[in-house]
Each structure stands twice: as structure tokens, then as C-alpha cells.
Amino acid sequence: MNDCELAAHLADIAGRILLNVRDSGVFAAKALGKAGDATANEFLCHALRAARGDDALLSEEEKDNLDRLNHARVWIVDPVDGTREYGEARADWAVHVGMAVDGVATLGAVALPGAGLVLRSDAPVVVPPAPTRLRMVVSRTRPAKEALAVAAALDAELIPMGSAGAKAMAVVLGQADIYLHTGGQYEWDSCAPVAVALAHGLHASRADGSPLVYNQRDTYMPDLLICRREHAALVLDAMAAAAA
Image (cartoon, rainbow, N blue to C red; front, side, top):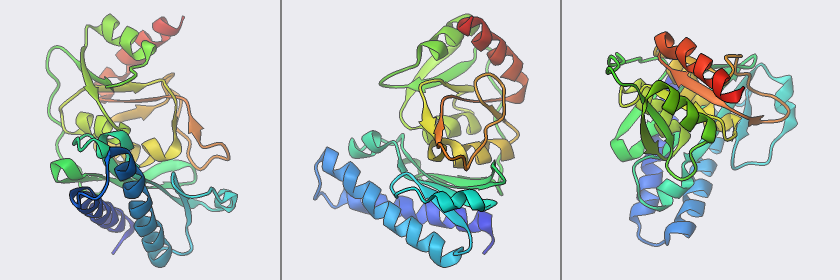
């Protein structure tokens, strides 16, 4: 199978494994999150090394090997994006399997096991049109003040949601129109979602409009914007005004 098919296949299987771990009834919420992270990570990392051993790998749950900086192709994985939501048996968590090529989020898949969906960069669906009043997804536990300010400036409806992948895919699915995050993330939080969003014709950038660059020595990524292309300038202008 090609890289996109592999990403989608592995994300789907990892999601099924995570549901089985959760449904086992063995773990309490906090322990469930740890067990799910460890189990999904072991599967994904072993599978990627077996199938694409010449590529580099960056996973949230593995010690970083900086040899990846010498590779053009790097798989970037988040075994459970939204560990809290997974542990609480919510649906707004995801599995990310993405690839950066020369620093660009090139392909990927985001599984939403709670919804029975896998969204992928090689099989874009039609993004539904936006309503008159825009909708912005924000963290359900700690919405960033900048995002709240932009939402107020645009009179956008706020939709609290869990994981980064769930928020990004809400825009792809037409359940929201803007995902603006300024609270800090890491490369694994956004690589696969950004690849999927771009393949669906959406805008994806830093909160100041600059490009997102992956496979960096420091994997911290301060901010992220995913939205429809026709709304990008509007959001970026409101963000600049909020930051002034």
C-alpha cells in the first residue's frame, strides 16, 4: 500500500485497539489514558518501522531521536490526541498518523474512533458551506484569550471541544469554520490534521499567517490556524488586532 493508505490503515487500527482497551473495563479514567497511549504507541511505532524502516519517526510517546533531522521523510504520530477525553470516554479524541517531507505536512490520516471516521489526505470529501454566523472551535477546558478575542471580533459562535485533531476535523466536516489555537502545541498535535486540512482545500498556517514547519529540533509549535481559505484574511486581521 502507498503512504497515504498506510497512514489511514494504521490510524484506523490504532483507533480500534484504543476502543477495545477502553471497553475492557479494566482501567479507571487516568489509568485508561496511560494504557491507551502506551498500547497505541507500541502498535504504531512497530508497524511504521516494519513498513517504512528507512523513514524517520517522531511520536509523542517515544524518546525523540534527533537523527530524524537528517531525514527528508518523517512520520509524525500522536497515538492518542486528547488523552483526557479518551480517558473520560468522550468522542472528541483522535489518532494522528502524518508525514512531513522536507518540513511540510504532506500526507496523513486522522481517525475519530468515537465517530467511526478516518479522514485522510488522499480521499478528500466536500467541505460543507459555512453558515452566515461563523463557528470557532476552542478548548473545552482552557480556551486561549486570543481565540476568544478573535471570536468576539468576528461575532463567531464558540464550540468547546477536546483534542486538536477533533477540532481540526470539525472544520473539515463542516461542523465548525475556524480552529485558532494560541496556547502552544507540539508537532504531533497538528501534522496529520494539517495534512488532511490542506488536502481538503483549507487554509493552515501559524496564527500570524506564516508557514507551519515540521521536523524541527524543537518540536514545540506555539500556535495554529485552520479555516476555510475565504476566511483566512479575516481571521488573521482579527488576530493581529487582538495581539496589538
